[in-house]
Image (cartoon, rainbow, N blue to C red; front, side, top):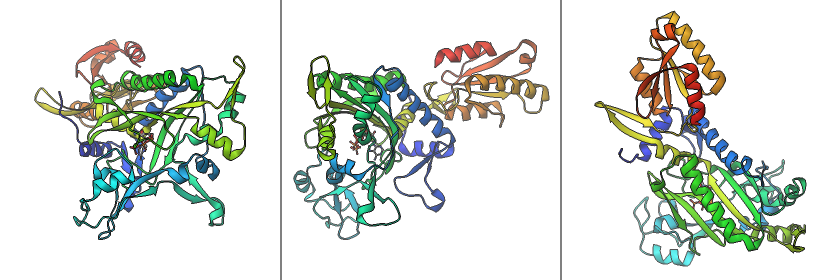
Length: 451
Ligand code: ATP
């Protein structure tokens, strides 16, 4: 069993191999913002495609959406975010540090009275002085101005979650798709939160991407639907992403921890290198959002059930997960440090459907034109079928294997002199390091069956 990876090791691998870079790093970066590099974006796309497939395409009653990031600010007033999307904050009067009160108190509670009690004797973690203010609520909405005049009438918000526009589009989707309850709306997209202390690499950021689904139901079905989407999240992680079951657990929100819109919330916590933390939330949002939009917009967003002749405001079960946190979980789960025949290696044991490249193709020697020519032909053939195939002729074979292990390429194909005679190549397996000879067509069908 390989020892647990540290966050520093992941940050270093991500930078070294082109997974994640600090945003605007040549200017010293900007706290809470990250760029995904050439290999990182491949994993991100794979994660999003797997989620979209499982949530939208494989379901009969979930519809996709791609809404604008900036909406009419009335949406966020009605949803309670302008008034209530807050985290508790304390300031240091001595050094000016601003710290998340619940993190400092090491509690899940965000109740201000409770935090005031817990923080009574605390000193500032930056300067060590006992000069902290009382905790207060701090709004995390990011503001901007729409149009050329920067006054209050032009203020708008970058969405703090992708959910909002799925509620305002409830009737548009219901009508255009002739949807009957239960049905869901799903979207993947950016959200922005002015986090007090972004930290732990891509775990807590200010610009994040979410994959969210809102499932509209008859209130009578809330328990079944809640359980259905909890189970979905768990199975997605273990079955589709290959996350080890022992590294995840359920965390039920207490009343003082729940978001302002939720009646019940169950998070899946994952064993990140910096601790067991929230990865994926399932929430019962009740009719909180639709009711508030009905009140604020004056539009009738109720549902009429033809069969029972009932008219009611649907309840909503939400499934919500961050792409970046899923990426970090996938890397943590895949990272292994091993010693094979006395040689150290770092290997990303990524599920084949998550790896940036399906396979790497190399000629055994770099200075033999006939080998290179045949290797290029084979590379082209694989590329036509899989797309994400990498040509690698740098360094000796051992170095190539180590490099491909580090970026999680499941197989390396080497073209040697025997290939010129009988068409077979060497196929090396990332996880076992075993090699076998196989033909190109055998490899194609093997890999197609793997994904
Ligand atoms: P936390 O308690 O960690 O701040 P949250 O409970 O506010 O998270 P939700 O509002 O439920 O999170 O958001 C749903 C999902 O979006 C989370 O489970 C997480 O995967 C992701 N997420 C939320 N905030 C961030 C952030 N600042 N950076 C990265 N991902 C985030």
